[in-house]
Image 1 (cartoon, rainbow, N blue to C red):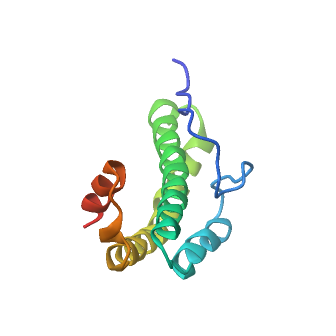
Image 2 (image 1 turned 90 degrees about the horizontal axis):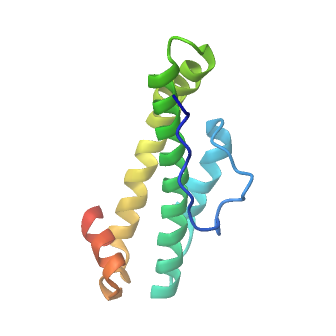
Length: 128
């Protein structure tokens, strides 16, 4: 059986292309930056949403790959099990509170109700 190939996404604009999900200390600065970033306009908010989504998407794809590899190769490859367990037990519990804080920041943003494009409205509705 072939390994799943990650889907192709738009070129990264927020994270460096060489960014990999490895240890929490490499991920934490991006969460902190998004939480601290000042949003002074709808343009700032739209950029913030794109950056937050890029981070979430990179994490989700990596976690999905680790889970799939673990399910497919769990008896054959100890390393895939280690990568999956590390993500599930070490990274995910640290990411979850930050995701909640980012969603709260977005929900509380004074510019959120002003955004009018369909994609953003659907996204904002899903956060609330």
